[in-house]
Amino acid sequence: MDQDQQLINASQVGDVDTLYALIQKDSYVLEHIDKLPFANSPLHFAASAGCTEFAMEIMKLMPSFAWKLNQDGFSPIHLALQNEQSQVVLGLLQLDGLLVRIKGRQGITPLHYVARSGNINLLAAFLSVCPKSIEDVTSRNETALHIALRSNMYEAFQFLLHWVCHEEDFYLKKKFLDHKDVEGNTLLHIATSRNQPQVCIFFSLVSPSLGRL
Image (tube, rainbow, N blue to C red; front, top):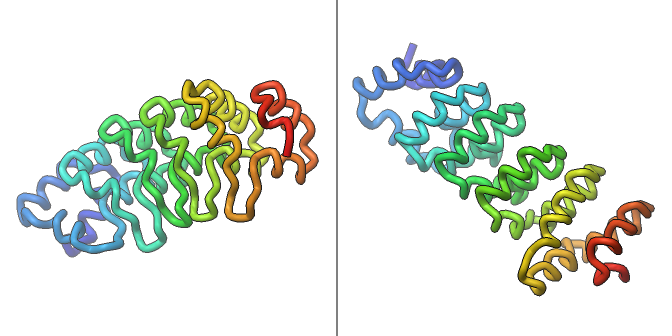
């Protein structure tokens, strides 16, 4: 078995001892991967498999792996979310909270992904470690609120809307609430077009400034 396959296998089962054995044989074994512009690093494999301890260990050795996209446009934290490996996600964020803002395929960040899946606990955790992540938009100029609303994740949408409306900066808050996606749709446009009166009522209660199109 070649070295690369040994590293992949170790990553998928969380074998830290094998990781260091391979490093002893070749001090540049991780750097070879890091030089590739797009690649599945050992951190990608570990995150997908839910090997939290291994993932955190290798991220400490090669922090750049956490920001690397694979050939499909996904970072390790994106893959962890796709495979419902929440402990890996939270572990990586302990080491670098800015990972909440990493943009993968179509400009989707981990916050966008969680808004689409409706996981309130992760939304709260993400905004706690990186409040600025609420400002990120996708390639379609969608905010996390747009995504939650379009995905019919009303609880997640309401959580995000409450969070935005508690912003102290009025102009920043208004910017979020009036933000238009690539098709020119605000949140209220989306709610109205989808015949979601409960959402429109919620807008009027939380932010009277949104009570009109």
